[in-house]
Amino acid sequence: MTTSTRGTGKLPAVLVLEDGRTFRGRAYGAVGETFGEAVFSTGMTGYQETLTDPSYHRQVVVMTAPHVGNTGVNDEDPESARIWVAGYVVRDPARVPSNWRSRRSLDEELAKQGVVGISGVDTRALTRHLRERGAMRVGIFSGQALPDEGIMLARVRQAPEMKGADLSAEVATKETYVVPAIGEKRFTVAAVDLGIKGMTPHRMAERGIEVHVLPATATAEDVYAVNPDGVFFSNGPGDPATADHPVSVMREVLSRKTPLFGICFGNQILGRALGFGTYKLKYGHRGINQPVQDRTTGKVEVTAHNHGFAVDAPLDAATDTPYGRVEVSHVCLNDNVVEGLQLLDQPAFSVQYHPEAAAGPHDAAYLFDRFVSLMEGQRA
Image (cartoon, rainbow, N blue to C red; front, side, top):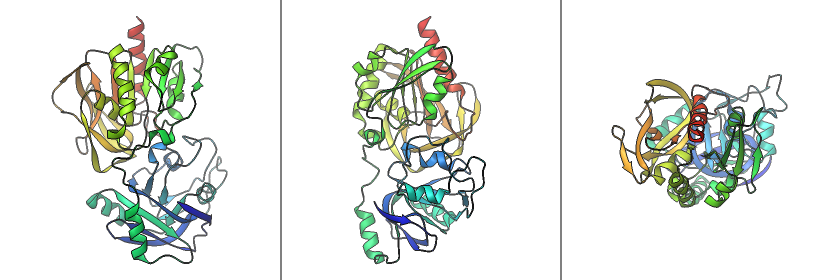
């Protein structure tokens, strides 16, 4: 990615998909060019959390909500220390942000962090195209003098694909750090960072958990060096088929029957550890309004998602694995994609979505309590 100055909204910009379709608009954020996988997010709020979610590494996010940037950018809501999206596509950016916590405009923040975006795009048409053709590589180009469209298309097609991408180590912490329990400490959890969001250890800390966040390269010995009551595997970017190291670490955790909880990428890692395959969804689930049913209770939750891959596990029968029986605990009501796994013979489970979701919804926050219950049961 190359960038220069902040987009004025007057400089021309063009978005080029790998199948040759183009959309013209105006520069938004930094001016230059960028490449990634084109995906769309259906959330109507929480754009700051979306931008700073490490799971969006190397993705160009198209916002389906027409108005973006209305509340500006603050210093309290980021999920990590930087913006991770490769590019940003909006229809009608706010001309003047308005919120009591706002410190600067979204346009300014994108430019400051070198994120190339485009505005004035018919995002409804672009989203429909991606739904029909599937997520694909894309480039955004902006500036006074743009390359020929044939040259731009060739450069898009030279960009790496998401399938086969091993990205978790690129976004994870390099050094272990500790998030202390809020109030009385009840448990210690080793959290393997595959692209963790800041709200995740906070949700555990609220429940009296001291969280030791470990690099994606952590070994089983590193995990058990903190003497954990439970082990957590986080969300993250990339193709789970490449994540052989986290799978091997998780298998060691399963063999020791330590209480285990995984979300998003962690759900896919659990699926692989149990012997299931994973596959790439046509256009994925991204947004904060996805309906999921918890099959253990029958309850339907509105949930936050960000995943382009899924676990290939049977929906209607328990499966025998080397670690005991496992069943699909949660399913997406839009398309029957596996959204959770639960072992029946030991304390381990995972979900494909985000129970820590900020700015919401909070229907799935109970899953952290379920993790606490597993650790309480193991201690007893």
